Image (cartoon, rainbow, N blue to C red):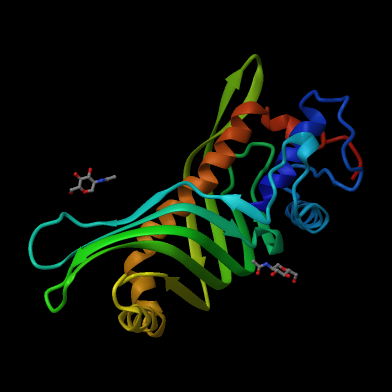
Length: 255
Ligand SMILES: *[C@@H]1O[C@H](CO)[C@@H](O)[C@H](O)[C@H]1NC(C)=O
Ligand SMILES: *[C@@H]1O[C@H](CO)[C@@H](O)[C@H](O)[C@H]1NC(C)=O
């Protein structure tokens, strides 16, 4: 995600807002120079964790996330579940380390584009609504606050792109973004899960946290789709607005 920050800055540099004074620290790169892109992205993250309001760069440390219906079984039969995350805020992107960037060649369609990174602790805080029925249990109907901590969160984003021409300029269009995620631990706490029974709420949370791997395996497809939409909407917006060639140094420019 933080590569985006680099892209945004570059856009602002070359996109025509010459009157804006941009940090001289932000380094431009040649096409396909993954090493340079990694350094530039990491420098930006380090130097501007709260974004750069002058160029509409959003803060990395506090980011709102769209509401997300994580589980939506059809509500029939003896066992089903519904879980909706709302008003979620994402904390911790400012601590991302980009480890590798591949692709972004002169012709971006020739090589696979990949962005690799890791985040020591990614936190989601917000509200949840849960409903459900279990064979062995009571009906669930609860809402409250939720906090999720994803520890040692590692991601690889793979992008498939094509090039579109507008006004004789090349624009990058993403038609597929596949996130791949690994993590060391997922800690979740759902407040008020059983409104009338705090002991049971604690028991269920403990159950979840002891068995987080099973929950992750089951919920991963939905979580990946969430990340996909978040990343994609950001990339799409940027590449939609700014010609691809304006994001990089010209071939003849020195480093
Ligand atoms: C959730 O599932 C129900 C029943 O299957 C469906 O009618 C509803 O449209 C779904 N909601 C969303 C947001 O997908
Ligand atoms: C990000 O790193 C800073 C400095 O180490 C730390 O204080 C902060 O809690 C981290 N953010 C999260 C969400 O863990």
